[in-house]
Length: 389
Image 1 (tube, rainbow, N blue to C red):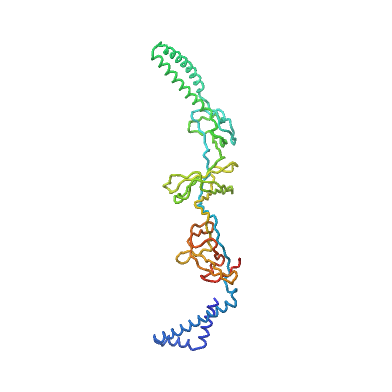
Image 2 (image 1 turned 135 degrees about the vertical axis):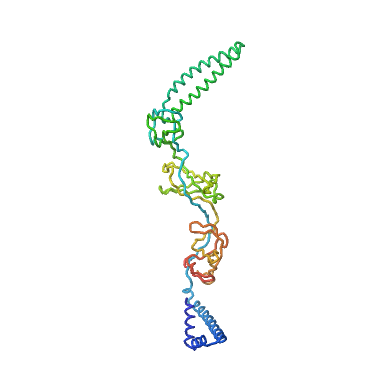
């Protein structure tokens, strides 16, 4: 700015001291092309001489008042560090042990052994259904089985002694085996009247009332859940598939709880949804405290890239030219001038951006000193005074 002011002042003094303005004005009105070109050449020589004089003056000013004329800035010495990039997506909390229990046989809800919110062990009786005479039928079939067994054993003894016909022996055996299977089937039917806990869990909601008429597979009795182990499910765009594997690091935040869990990917789907070109993943979460509930919304950061020896530069310190090339100002020490450096415009190849920092792939190395504050005002080869060293 001072250089331009000096140049303007010298030009103004020259104009005021001679007849150049009058010559220029008269030539512009009445002069021919040759005269105009001659005058332009003369003025260009004068201007070049003025520039040389200004450069000399500028050099003299710097030598007498160097520090005040330097651009002030701060520096940053590059060190290698671990760099992790994360892809963000939204997921839903769920559990595999979230079960609505339905009856397998038509019956009346006879007895409810538990209460809502009660925690029970696997195999604990939950409800009892009316058997509709199934128990009586079972007892009758057992009596028939006992008789069939006795008949078969006697026929077998006779047959072993070559007494009696083969058909009598086979009929007794068939009758015994048939009744044996019928009793087993009836036992299974009777067992369905007593519904037990399929796993350790909590009675979340008793849906049906005592005495209600239940239809198999249609009338819900109760909801039984275990929330000790939950997982996040989410749909990830297909483009991220090559970078996400089993055990990839994940950070799960539940906004409503204001809590974060650190876990790993436990499942990567093998199917690409054709509607949204995404694949499914799951992340297991420990929920011993019981704060997680099914269908909660989760925000997930999934690690898809890691560089243990990365060079990171803050985004604000990376500039771009008109061609879109990225560059920084590398600071070169000037001997004999403490804390004074020359700013060298250095082009770099960038990698992945994360947390307002950019990974530098090429152009810089560990130990390089770059300009930090003041980078927007710096020019190539400019002398910089570093104030934080």
